[in-house]
Length: 287
Image (cartoon, rainbow, N blue to C red; front, top):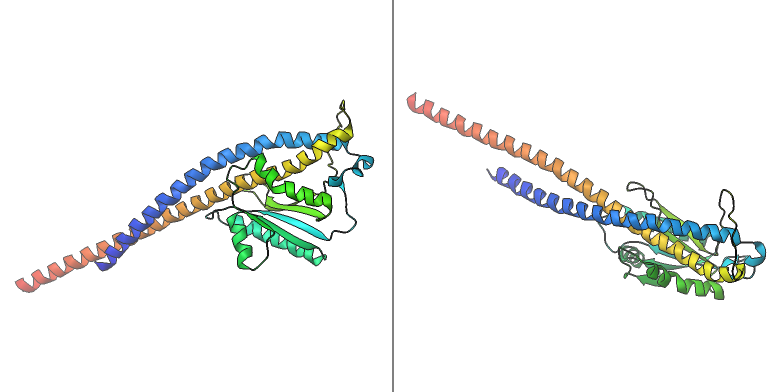
C-alpha cells in the first residue's frame, strides 16, 4: 500500500496548497476592490485638469512655460517603470518589464540616451540581473499609492526637465480597464502635450490670469498623470494576483479530483487482490 500512502500525502499537500491560494485570492479580491475605488476617484479630477488645461493652452503661452517646451532633438530621456514589490501575479511584472525594454530599445535606436528609474523590487531585480544601470530605484511605494508618492517620483524629473538635463520623461505602467484587462502602456509625461478634448469648450472667468494659473496647473497636471499611473498599476497588480490565485485554486481542485480517483482505484485494486488471495487460499485448503 506504499503507493496509496504516497497518494494520501500528495492529497494532503494539495489540499493545503489550495487553502493558501484560496486565501490569497480572497485577500487580492478585497484589495482589488479598494484599488478600483481609487482609480475611479482619480478620474474626475484628472478630466477636470485636462479640460482646464485644454481651454487655457495656446501657442503664445506655451513658449513661456518650460514644462511645455518641445525640444528640437531629444538627446536624453528618462523612463520611469512601475512594477510591484511582490510576485505571484501571473505575467503582470513580466509584461511591464517587456514594455519598458521595448521603449528603451526604440529610444536608443533613435540615438537617445536613456536613464532608468525603477519602482518596485521586481523591476529593479530584473535590470540588476541583466546588468543594466539604474539612475534610481524605489521599493517604498505601497499598494495604496498617494499623491505624495507621485510628487516624490516626478518632482526631481520635472526640475531636471526644466533645467534641460533631460528632454523627455516617460512612464511605463498598466492601463486599468477591467479586472481582466490591464495592458502595459508607455505614457509620455514631459514635455506636456497640448490636451485635445472633444465637445464644446467651456468658458472660464480667469483670475488672476491664464499665465498665473498655468504656473500652478502644469506641475499639478504632471503629478496627477503619475498618480493615475500609480493607482492604475496598483489596481492591475491586485487584479492579476487575484486571477493567478483563482487559476491556481481551480487547478489544485482538478488535481485533487484526479488524485482521489487514482487513490480510490488503487485501494479498490488492493482490496480485490486481497479478496482473491483469501478465496484462493480457502479453495486450496478445501481442495
